[in-house]
Amino acid sequence: MRLISVVMGVDTTNNRTSDTVKLLNYGFNSYKLSTIFEKDKVVDEVRVEKGKKESVRIILMEDATELLGVNDKAKNYTINVKLDKLIAPLKRGDKVGEAEVLDNEGNLVTNIGITVSEDIKKANLWDYFKRNLDVSLMGKKIFTK
Image (tube, rainbow, N blue to C red):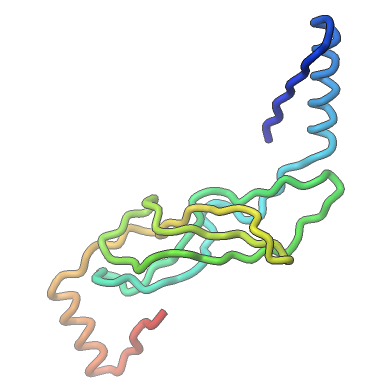
């Protein structure tokens, strides 16, 4: 948490310094930064088109935080994932969408970028052949999400 103090209209440097210290102490003693969800938290698993793997987990690119009063308790939060269709190849660290963090009243707390949990290479002809063979012979369930 970073605080910035701006004091104007004070007659001396000592008074300005004193007022700044009072403001910063008030801010640090009255507020805290609460981590809602940590970086790399898995928020969903989605289908990947044209990939060697049929699905991949989606993770947060950074911590989701909220500024709370020192005596405030953390609320219940939900994540609303917004992403486009994923088409291979994909690399971990590349932004593929956003996660909206909502509090228990439905208010937007923050937006966090999301990425894939691992690199996904593009499928080749052999991968498609094996996948279709599994579906036709073994009745393998196709990933539908």
